[in-house]
Image (cartoon, rainbow, N blue to C red; front, top):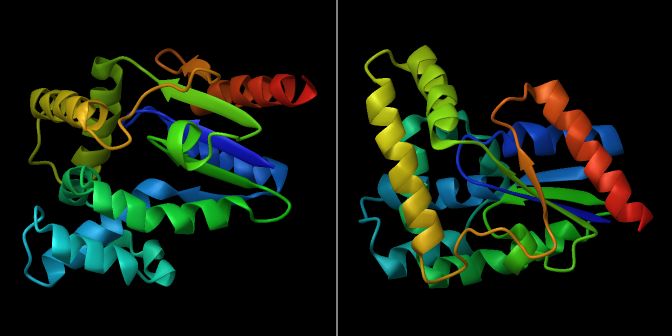
Length: 208
């Protein structure tokens, strides 16, 4: 069984997907960590983020064990990953890994930007998680402030809007809600409320 969780940055999809996977006893993959890891490796070796050859080489040689690197959660890595994710050849190089992971038994929960549309279009249940840009910026601002106080809410809101535009506007696998995905707006929800709503959507979809 495959559960696809998509949505923009700071919508809560990662936390939600992890809780769903734990609840169901499924394997979990944060596909964004793949692009973060590629961006990390590209920069660590002194290449530019727009160097397609280097990015593809890093994607093809990516070590899954390195996805637990806490450095992948640092603020600048997410922005770098968004640029890396816009390279079609990188997406193609990582696609097989994601699809193989999705076949994990007894099931898998994957979150990202294109799980329901490209990676696993045949997923048993699909949820597109979103929230207003202002609320997502508030969440990300609080996260970043805890790590580094040298950031403002206004800067974070600009970053969120730019990230949305880049993710939705790229030519290869743009972020969008799949036609058969349920929409879950978490703007006014805490994680427990969002979790209950998501599980309800999944159960309803599976029962159909």
